[in-house]
Length: 495
Image 1 (tube, rainbow, N blue to C red):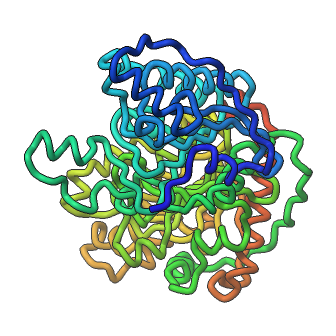
Image 2 (cartoon, rainbow, N blue to C red):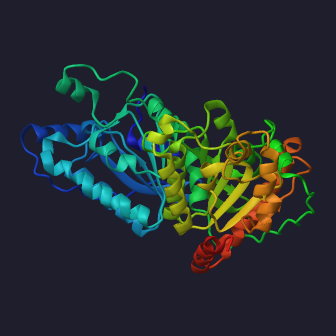
């Protein structure tokens, strides 16, 4: 694997000639003996005075802060001086309101400085936490290798985290593991691609593609929240009085567009995120950053294709959804949720994984989220797995979408001990979009002409325009009034 220096990576990612170093003279750590010799040799070899470089530059014209490790300087290890430089850089980025791009590559804490170097993780983490609390984006590129205290602090706190292909990324370095336990660490575990498969990385990309994904992410994360261009509301179309069961059957057509097609056709600057960041990834949910028109959002939608291939979504999908909710709340971005599920998983793994608790926590987070929220009922809306993403400031529904406590067949089995009366149950329970509008569960319906499965791209474009209009209207509203109205809406629903 070809290893770029920190400066080479910065020059690759930032606009040419835009990088300005922030680094000042390093703290004197009082190094003596062989450690002083090692420091002198590292300085001579790299032309740097420490293992961390900080500064600012332009990314596609946008001002950004940068922090990068130099592996050639004592393995990129972090001691007191490196930690002080890194912390000062993060604090400066926060004070100046700049997004921060970080590129760790390190063996971790600098062993020559002992415990005092080890506890620098706390200082660095506090600075990153303050940067995030200020609503500023933090993007991380984990290079080969990134281990130890670096991964266990600033390396794992990104809003978006990308790994270098083939990079060794792990908490305990394999050499340390082998020395402690007398055997080699299992192959293929501490590799970027494996971490991606387990939902710990959002992407695995070569350095040449970093500028592109960072620019798209920041286009969404730094998009203006006010002063957006006015958007005309699509006229509301007359809707045929279609029986509930017909809508249910239409919503299940394989050709019906799902969240991936919606994003591809109607959204821009899409950056797909991956997993919970805590070791889980469920193909039943898609999490992304995106814009509809000029309106930015965190987008989380139930993926009908992923559920068809892998089975019903499990509790990990809802933990991934909660990651999206936290992201929206922290960065002050609107949250768009999309419901399209035949139901949550009913299995031993789902029960032991806390499915019911995850539904409850999603509901609690959505009804109390500070950010604007918009829900799209796109297709099937079955059971608690659907309800978990429903509470929002505004709820819109596709014409043939529906929402019910169980699939109509399941409700029929409970009520009549047969699935044969599913159509009657669907009609009596008020599951279709017209019934949901009547009962104030949804606020508007997006017409299908006369079935989204037969006009997928046109339907997605109409839906995108509705989402854009609703997002702009939400962003223009008063946050306190919006929050109060949301609580009042669900407090009085059905009363």
